[in-house]
Image (cartoon, rainbow, N blue to C red; front, side, top):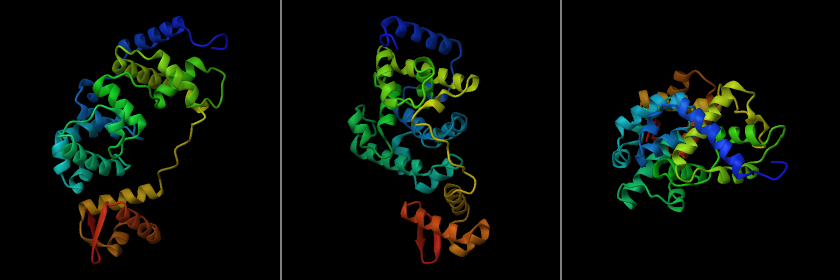
Length: 275
């Protein structure tokens, strides 16, 4: 890299290392056993900010309960949140329902296969759109996620600190296996998972590295507690919620208001329930 940048030989050697590890140690994940765009979309949304181990079991339950865009679009938010429980970041469940409604009404139940159209859908950013194009449609898109970032920092930025994604992206593009981007990205991600287990995490040298804020005692935890309670006991008052949760009353009131504003919770008189 210092002498003249990445070369065809270094690309070939890099690919050989990544593919050899992948062929010897592939992760057998349910969403890798399909090219169904709906199922891959669900997995990608679930994997946003959630570990693979937690997603694996919930993914199967979700797909069994909601096997298509149409079934998800027709379901109530309450039923979706019941299945989603344990995943956290409940806004994703709301976005999935809205997305399913849009795909059903505007695209006849078929997920579009262009980046521009995908990014117009609720909850879909550039990374998720690119990942869907690669995994569902095997299109050679260029993107970075945490495991991919780890691989490129490990191989091409040894001894460097504050490595920017803008430095990594050209290498991702140059090394991309355009004949089979789906398998190449799976291989990169699996190598990244291995690196995290066996080495000092290279991502700590990324300019974008941030420690995740504690979950315990956070507003996110309180909102999750409120939603779980309302799913079990709909139509209860604010005072009953405070009594049941035995938590800081002001924090509960604040987060109950947030849930209302975000469309999770509705109120009729003094009674609250999941919409």
